[in-house]
Amino acid sequence: MKHAAITALWVSVLVYSLISVVAGPTGLGALAVLHHDAQRMAENVAELEARNRDLEARWNALRSDPSSIAVEGRALGYLANGELAVRLPSMAQPDVAYAGRVLLRSEQGAVRPQEARLWALCCGLFAAAVVFLCSLRFSRKTDTHSFGSS
Image 1 (cartoon, rainbow, N blue to C red):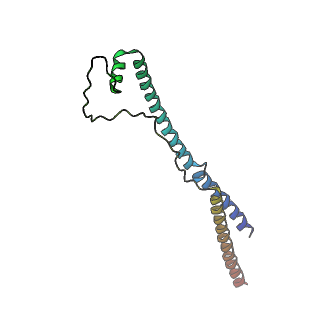
Image 2: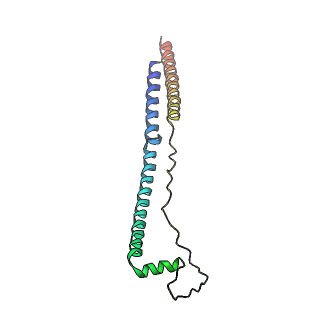
Image 3: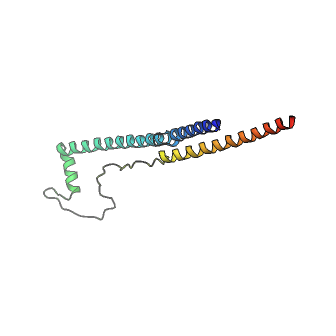
C-alpha cells in the first residue's frame, strides 16, 4: 500500500508539472502565443513609423513648398485667383487617415491550474489503483506458489 501511495504522489506531481510546463498559463504554448503577438506588434510599430515619416515629409512640404500647398488646396476645393473650377466625377477614393491596425491579444487556450490539479489527481489515483491491483495480484501468485509448495 505504501508503494501505491508513493507512486500516486509521484505520478500526480509529474503530470501536474508536465501539464504546467506544456499547456499552463505560463507554459510553452503561452510563450509561443506571446512571441507571435510581440512579432505582430513589432511589425505594426515599423509600419506606423514609416507612416509617421511619410506624414512628416508631407507636413514639411506643406509648410514650405508652394506647389505642394497649391496641390493640397485644390484637393480641398480651393482655387487660385483667375482659376475656373470644373468638377468631373472621380473614380479615386479620398485619402483617409490611417492610424494603424488594432492588435488584439491572442487567445492562449492555456489549461487553468485547477484543471491541471484535477488531471494530476486523477492520474495519481489511477496509478495508485494500478499499483495496488498489481501488488494484490503479485501477492496472490506468491501465496499460491508458497501454498502449493508446502
